[in-house]
Each structure stands twice: as structure tokens, then as C-alpha cells.
Length: 106
Image (cartoon, rainbow, N blue to C red; front, top):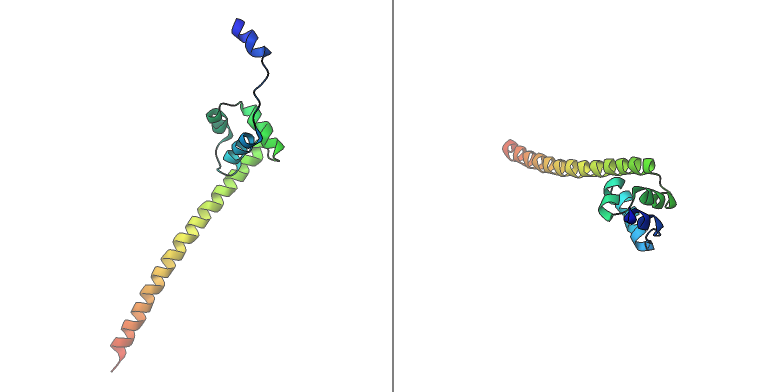
């Protein structure tokens, strides 16, 4: 009972700007779940929510933003894979064209 009274009387901890910015980046740039970030950093989800709001993002926007960013990363990876496959196919086509040219020479 005494501990609860002491806890209610203490002011909330102060976090420096770099810590707040780092927490927001973990959510917005790294695409991590806000609840997971709050738990890992030992802060209240409402605290993180207020920092996100101060940075211009809402939790709903963050998850939508994270989904969009993940989709973009997935599409970029697919493009890289397809370009690599296209390059390999073009090499095979060039080799076949040269072999057809050699065989068709009288």
C-alpha cells in the first residue's frame, strides 16, 4: 500500500529529445510494432503514442505507413530478383544466337 502511494506521488520520468526521436524512428522507419517498442524501452504505450502524435503521426497512420513501407521494400526486392533473372535470360539468348550463327554457316 505504501509503495502505491509513493508511486502516485512521483513525477513521471523525463526523456531527452534523442531518446524520443529514437523511439519514434523505431516505429516509423524500422516498421516495428508500437506496443513492442514501448515494452522494449520500458515506457508506457500512451507516452509513445504522444511522441508519435507530436511527430505528426497517429498509431493508425503508423501501421498504415509501416504496411506501405513494407510493401515498397517487398516490391523493390522483387524488382531486383526479376532484373537478375532477366539478365541471366539475356545471356542465354545471346549464347543461343551465337551458336545458331555458327551452325548455320556453310
